[in-house]
Length: 87
Image (cartoon, rainbow, N blue to C red; front, side):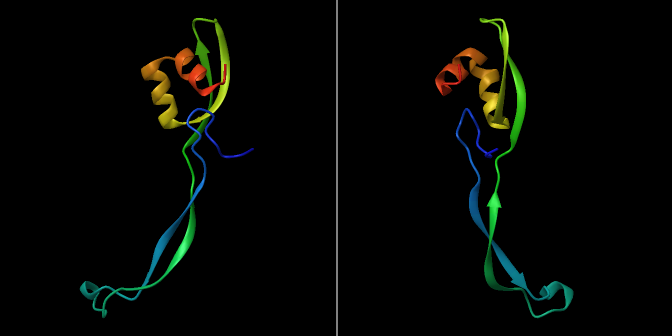
């Protein structure tokens, strides 16, 4: 399955990491040098959970980020899932 949040739409992004070489001056070297950048993937913190909707009296299984679950706690399950188009 795709690594996409069903509420916020967060997905895997591509970033870069700075690659350094050399020994630090504190440790007796001549200093660290930036030699290149390396591509890496930044993945969202996805969780799969069953969310109870009290108004309808049923559970819905969703795959969402941890930040999306905080939004559900704040705004309520039904309002958040309706805004996302899940129910």
